[in-house]
Image (cartoon, rainbow, N blue to C red):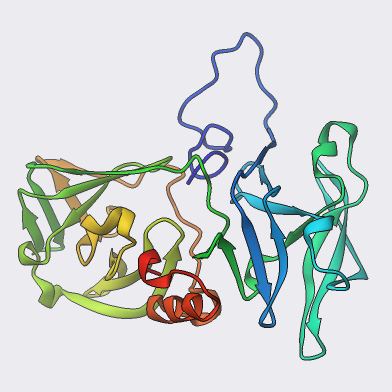
Length: 300
């Protein structure tokens, strides 16, 4: 989560409100310079490299990085006939991205070609389809899933509250030492140490997703309750405290905190992102090292 999706202030499901005399428009778009060096890689080549990237925030969407045309490698973009209409930004022209004859991404990039005057910040800028490219980097560290939101924050706190997880008549977890993870726009998520879980209740499922802020996530079913729990086997250094702990989805299993049942809050469902090109954390580290990045320090 961040500024414009889940329950952020510019999202359609914001939990707060602006204290202003007149209602704000239902759709507010916001653009801001990233103030970080960002690079895009495709076909084994750096195709864009800029310290002037703009992030566009629009309701219900992840932030999107827009590169100045001048910071995109020559002859990489090939205009195609396909166009779309953005509800706020007008006509959008699409491009194939060509690194060489063997590496071509059809509809791999786009540009708003008839911007209204109020959106001139995006003039002569190009956005790349995230999953169509090989990778994106901030400096030498890979950013996975989608562009990182600078307004996204995670805090982790130790608690001594009594957390009990049940499925039907079975107690799956019982702890008085949970960790609580506070993440921008989300209700608190409670994580449990393995020693306080009946691990025989957890069945791994063949699903992994990437969080740009926490890392590679694995999932578990509990009996016939699919994807009822999840864990980060090797969480990023910034959130290392939740590594290998387990959290439970309160709309699938029963989760009680100090006797009060928790429920999934409105707007909390997550749009999952699979690992880019099916890489795992170790492979991403190897790939970073291959392009000259300090992969070991990045942790994935």
